Length: 120
Figure 1 (cartoon, rainbow, N blue to C red):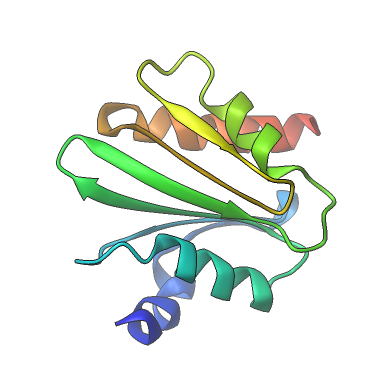
Figure 2 (tube, rainbow, N blue to C red; figure 1 turned 90 degrees about the vertical axis):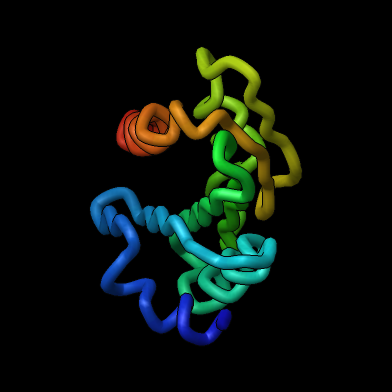
């Protein structure tokens, strides 16, 4: 299953080359977002990787990675969830994770893009 999801990344992910960002929402029966994020980050060490997965009908869980340590993933996600109720994020510089209500999926993605464009 993971190999298929990784193979589909180029066609299904939101790729923002100008800000070195890949946002990829996966559809999988099991919780594999962290594994997918790790694999993608090894192949793209100088890019910010955010993998999102719907784990129940009302919630999106996400994992973020960046192997070159040029951006702090914990700070990026903590900033991206500001203003989103019932959300959480945290972790470490190269790896972080959290969750948001499904209704705020687009807002969360917009926040990440905005933050990276602003160079925060």
